[in-house]
Length: 149
Image (cartoon, rainbow, N blue to C red):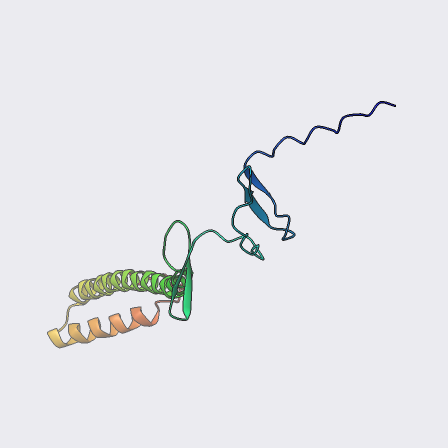
Protein backbone atom coordinates (compact mmCIF):
# COMPACT_ATOMS: atom_id res chain seq x y z
CA UNK A 1 0.00 0.00 0.00
CA UNK A 2 1.12 3.38 -0.83
CA UNK A 3 1.06 5.95 1.84
CA UNK A 4 -0.57 9.25 0.83
CA UNK A 5 1.11 12.45 1.76
CA UNK A 6 -0.70 14.62 4.32
CA UNK A 7 -2.96 17.33 2.89
CA UNK A 8 -1.33 20.70 2.38
CA UNK A 9 -1.90 23.23 5.16
CA UNK A 10 -4.74 25.70 4.54
CA UNK A 11 -3.66 29.00 3.06
CA UNK A 12 -3.09 31.68 5.69
CA UNK A 13 -6.06 33.97 6.34
CA UNK A 14 -5.46 37.49 5.06
CA UNK A 15 -5.57 40.32 7.59
CA UNK A 16 -9.07 41.61 8.35
CA UNK A 17 -12.03 41.53 10.71
CA UNK A 18 -13.32 38.05 11.52
CA UNK A 19 -15.75 36.57 14.04
CA UNK A 20 -13.91 36.40 17.36
CA UNK A 21 -13.12 32.79 18.20
CA UNK A 22 -13.40 33.47 21.95
CA UNK A 23 -16.41 35.82 22.13
CA UNK A 24 -19.60 34.84 20.29
CA UNK A 25 -21.17 37.68 18.29
CA UNK A 26 -18.05 39.86 18.48
CA UNK A 27 -15.56 40.64 15.73
CA UNK A 28 -11.83 40.80 16.13
CA UNK A 29 -8.92 41.94 13.97
CA UNK A 30 -6.66 39.22 12.53
CA UNK A 31 -3.23 40.56 11.56
CA UNK A 32 -2.51 37.61 9.33
CA UNK A 33 -0.44 35.89 12.01
CA UNK A 34 -2.05 36.73 15.37
CA UNK A 35 -5.34 38.06 16.73
CA UNK A 36 -5.51 41.72 17.73
CA UNK A 37 -6.52 43.00 21.18
CA UNK A 38 -9.70 41.59 22.75
CA UNK A 39 -12.90 43.04 21.29
CA UNK A 40 -15.04 45.58 23.03
CA UNK A 41 -18.47 44.37 24.08
CA UNK A 42 -20.92 44.53 21.20
CA UNK A 43 -23.33 47.48 21.50
CA UNK A 44 -26.90 46.55 22.39
CA UNK A 45 -28.21 48.81 19.63
CA UNK A 46 -26.51 50.77 16.87
CA UNK A 47 -25.60 54.34 17.84
CA UNK A 48 -27.95 57.03 16.58
CA UNK A 49 -26.66 59.90 14.43
CA UNK A 50 -25.57 62.94 16.35
CA UNK A 51 -23.15 63.71 19.11
CA UNK A 52 -23.78 62.92 22.76
CA UNK A 53 -22.29 65.46 25.12
CA UNK A 54 -22.00 64.46 28.77
CA UNK A 55 -21.57 67.22 31.35
CA UNK A 56 -21.54 65.96 34.91
CA UNK A 57 -24.46 63.59 35.28
CA UNK A 58 -26.49 65.13 32.43
CA UNK A 59 -26.17 64.31 28.77
CA UNK A 60 -27.63 65.92 25.72
CA UNK A 61 -27.86 64.50 22.22
CA UNK A 62 -27.64 66.96 19.39
CA UNK A 63 -29.08 66.53 15.96
CA UNK A 64 -26.36 65.94 13.41
CA UNK A 65 -26.98 69.01 11.26
CA UNK A 66 -27.95 71.82 13.56
CA UNK A 67 -25.87 71.03 16.62
CA UNK A 68 -28.60 72.41 18.89
CA UNK A 69 -29.88 70.12 21.65
CA UNK A 70 -33.21 68.53 20.77
CA UNK A 71 -35.01 69.81 23.86
CA UNK A 72 -34.31 73.37 22.72
CA UNK A 73 -36.14 72.66 19.46
CA UNK A 74 -39.15 71.49 21.47
CA UNK A 75 -39.05 74.47 23.84
CA UNK A 76 -38.46 76.88 20.96
CA UNK A 77 -41.44 75.49 19.06
CA UNK A 78 -43.69 75.46 22.12
CA UNK A 79 -42.88 79.11 22.83
CA UNK A 80 -42.26 80.39 19.31
CA UNK A 81 -45.46 79.23 17.63
CA UNK A 82 -47.82 80.93 20.14
CA UNK A 83 -45.71 84.10 20.03
CA UNK A 84 -45.94 84.21 16.22
CA UNK A 85 -49.70 83.61 16.36
CA UNK A 86 -50.14 86.31 19.02
CA UNK A 87 -48.15 88.81 16.94
CA UNK A 88 -50.26 87.97 13.88
CA UNK A 89 -53.47 88.50 15.84
CA UNK A 90 -52.14 91.81 17.17
CA UNK A 91 -51.35 93.01 13.64
CA UNK A 92 -54.84 92.04 12.47
CA UNK A 93 -56.45 93.85 15.41
CA UNK A 94 -54.36 96.95 14.72
CA UNK A 95 -55.39 96.90 11.07
CA UNK A 96 -59.05 96.50 12.02
CA UNK A 97 -58.71 99.30 14.56
CA UNK A 98 -57.08 101.56 11.98
CA UNK A 99 -59.85 100.92 9.49
CA UNK A 100 -62.46 101.50 12.22
CA UNK A 101 -61.03 104.93 13.06
CA UNK A 102 -61.31 105.84 9.37
CA UNK A 103 -64.95 104.74 9.46
CA UNK A 104 -65.56 106.92 12.54
CA UNK A 105 -64.05 109.86 10.69
CA UNK A 106 -66.29 109.25 7.67
CA UNK A 107 -69.38 109.03 9.93
CA UNK A 108 -68.45 112.32 11.63
CA UNK A 109 -67.90 114.07 8.29
CA UNK A 110 -71.20 112.78 6.87
CA UNK A 111 -73.12 113.86 9.98
CA UNK A 112 -71.49 117.31 9.95
CA UNK A 113 -72.39 117.74 6.27
CA UNK A 114 -76.01 116.81 7.07
CA UNK A 115 -76.01 119.26 9.98
CA UNK A 116 -74.93 122.09 7.67
CA UNK A 117 -77.78 121.22 5.32
CA UNK A 118 -80.30 121.15 8.18
CA UNK A 119 -79.29 124.60 9.35
CA UNK A 120 -80.39 125.96 12.72
CA UNK A 121 -78.25 127.29 15.52
CA UNK A 122 -74.74 126.08 16.21
CA UNK A 123 -75.96 124.21 19.31
CA UNK A 124 -78.66 122.48 17.24
CA UNK A 125 -76.07 121.39 14.67
CA UNK A 126 -73.75 120.02 17.43
CA UNK A 127 -76.65 118.07 18.94
CA UNK A 128 -77.60 116.77 15.51
CA UNK A 129 -74.02 115.62 14.80
CA UNK A 130 -73.78 113.89 18.21
CA UNK A 131 -77.12 112.10 17.72
CA UNK A 132 -76.24 111.18 14.14
CA UNK A 133 -72.91 109.65 15.20
CA UNK A 134 -74.54 107.68 18.04
CA UNK A 135 -77.22 106.40 15.68
CA UNK A 136 -74.71 105.31 13.03
CA UNK A 137 -72.56 103.51 15.60
CA UNK A 138 -75.61 101.75 17.05
CA UNK A 139 -76.57 100.58 13.55
CA UNK A 140 -73.07 99.32 12.75
CA UNK A 141 -74.13 95.66 12.57
CA UNK A 142 -77.67 96.29 11.30
CA UNK A 143 -77.93 96.05 7.52
CA UNK A 144 -81.68 96.72 7.34
CA UNK A 145 -81.31 100.35 6.29
CA UNK A 146 -77.81 100.11 4.88
CA UNK A 147 -74.66 101.59 6.30
CA UNK A 148 -74.61 105.20 7.52
CA UNK A 149 -71.53 105.88 5.44
